[in-house]
Image 1 (cartoon, rainbow, N blue to C red):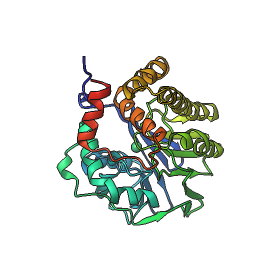
Image 2 (image 1 turned 90 degrees about the vertical axis):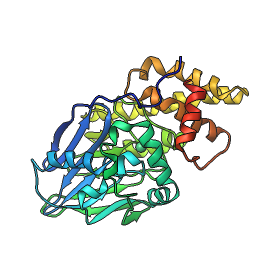
Image 3 (image 1 turned 30 degrees about the vertical axis):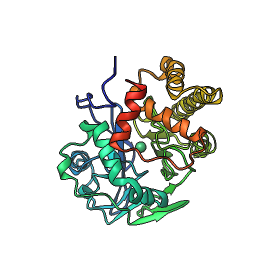
Image 4 (image 1 turned 60 degrees about the vertical axis):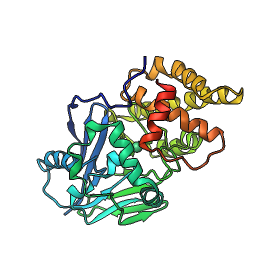
Length: 319
Ligand SMILES: [Zn+2]
């Protein structure tokens, strides 16, 4: 029996929780839906991630406005995915900050990714007609960009840790409070999505660099805030474990000349006991296995996910 496509039948709203992680540092988590965050500067706010639509973003901003009425000067996008970028207009940010490759990916595939993600996760696209168009970064960088927060608040460091979830992920690091916003490079008890990923680099040097910050609190792309060094390490290593098992299982089947479907079944069997109960596990796995397979085929640059290709891969693997 075929499973319902991606998250198309996940239609029940999640409970959203706003947490104050340090003075002027906020995270909004939502039971496995994409997380967002904000950091107060002296006379401005930096927001991290934009949500899928301006209407969805406004709900988050309403919660944030219970704590601060400072204007949003910077909107930081950790990567190009539609559910994290298309709500940007709600922030009226002076600057939209992202990695060079994020800007390039939006230009290359942003419109197609919009249609793909809308089909996969319709619930996140609240009032999709409120989206004015693609979100274009106004400030991009390749390695590191530091935003002084002013007023004795220290700095916010934006850093590229290597390729991982996409070619252009960045993290947002607050050295003073030890809080790290990791984007989708780290998931906290939610399944990683790897359909645009660079599996080996992500599971090795990129996550090593993320771990090297020594964060005391980590806000991943989805799932609860990891609080304390042990929980931070656990979240990073859970993500690494998922990637490692996925890569190993798909690699064995690919290496012996098996089929994509066999690789999917092997990966599913190996991952499900540990990760199968996590949000979006079934949704992600077909796309993850396909990208992993493509990498083993020598396809360096991730193929573009169109709404049509989404359905084809789903039918082949989850059908
Ligand atoms: Zn993502």
